[in-house]
Amino acid sequence: MTPAPPHGGAEPGDGWDGRWEQALRELELDVAAAERLLAAAHLPDVDEVTARRWRPPAGLGPLPAPLRERAQALLDHQLDLARRAAEAMTLARRQLAAADALRTRPAAVPVFVDTQA
View 1: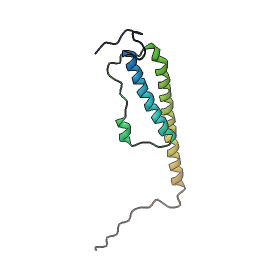
View 2: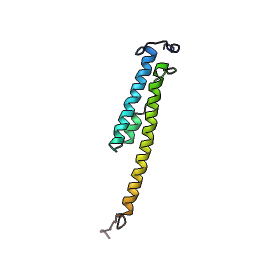
View 3: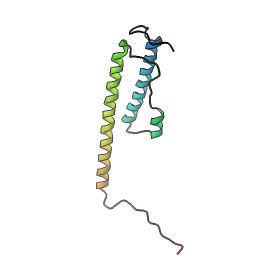
View 4: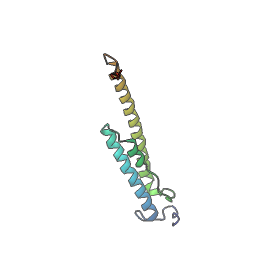
């Protein structure tokens, strides 16, 4: 593996910067997918989320200075999305509690009858 070049030592799209651009692009796609799920008020199976968990590629080295602004904007977007997802979960819990409070009778409880006796 080639060591990371010194700060600013690679052209955008090549080598070191290119690996960072690809890593950021993957994160941006994942954030966009999460944004669509939140907008649709639908969450995928936990297995699907776990399988898609992003891991940084090995050997990236320090973030190139020209990509700092893009990375910061992506981080800000992720944090905003996490905040909105937490708000959506809180709202869903409140709506569930309100629906339960409106029930005129308790939820159905299964009853088993032994017909063999």
